[in-house]
Image 1: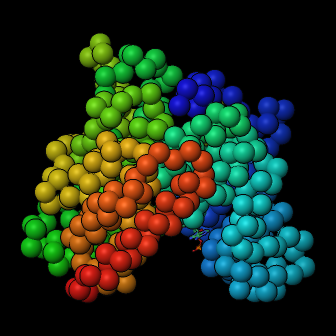
Image 2 (image 1 turned 90 degrees about the vertical axis):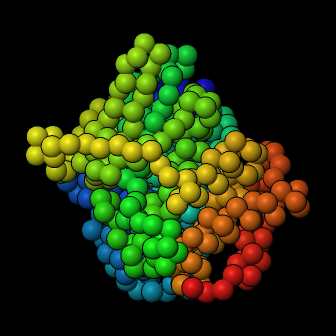
Length: 412
Ligand code: NDP
Ligand code: MG
């Protein structure tokens, strides 16, 4: 953690981050996703400031080709190897190099660049992000799984390689800004806010019958489907507490969350002298993305301006861990430590995919995750992790255990 904080405090790099006033060479992993598109929107509005190096996607081959042409990227990589031909056809005559497959995604992350936006969803983003870290790059980190599943291993690698980590997740970007390089012993508490998702006021009976269509209707944020479902279960806030634990120099007891339905305040940092610093912004990911891309400077983002008089009131309430047990399960995994968060994340990815396919009921998501962690504990899979390979093998084992649990559930 020390080196991450130090690098953050140094504030070196930033927009025009190669220090010589040239444009920032930027790679976007997960370019077709919600974060990827928001990043490229900022790039398009600041054409002088950025030069796009590599762009990647998993299966949206036409969208990827269109992005590569539009941004004049040097390299386009599709994760699904069967789509290499389609990508080559779509980019013929463009001068953009093409490649496909999981190893090619890792190679894309290694291309010379000043900054890598790590915006692949899920544990699939871990290896490419590690590859960017190995090159000592500035990492704008949206992929929360690197910190959740690989926390200590990831931050140690950032330190070892002299990479620079800038959080993109809105709450962590907010904490990073409100911390402003403060000493660890000055901080009393870091409180992340949660919107509460679309089911904030729903009863247990309503939650039991919640459908993917209902869960995908987030009241405030427009995001990819995985993180939208995690917001509905509050698992997202649990994952974010684990993220915060690895990013900021405070212990588990100094981390908390509060439900704030308007999603205007993103994080509050309480100091020992009684001061509380909060970061406020309308819910638009282009703000935290701009913070990460431009740090230590600021760049313009075309977001709605905050108008407190029009909003009138901001409200806060305690999260309900009975109706939203995923938060309790994630907090327990954070306290258990070792590979428990990696198992939590893998099981949750399996559970969310099953929910989206209507093979699992909404309330069974947290149940399945908790059972998988118990099963992993029984077979000795919750243990210290020393390296990336340990994390990837625990992730695979946890997916197998979660699939076994899933087979015991009836479809809703
Ligand atoms: P999306 O689902 O919108 O996009 C995911 C991106 O990753 C797409 O480019 C997708 O390609 C690619 N991808 C999917 N699966 C794989 C795979 N197996 N291998 C390689 N690439 C893959 O996700 P989001 O943009 O919402 O989220 C990205 C990350 O940012 C997540 O970790 C999320 O938790 C985090 N985050 C997102 C926020 C948001 O507002 N969206 C807020 C805070 C954090 P394709 O399109 O071809 O499938
Ligand atoms: Mg967030």
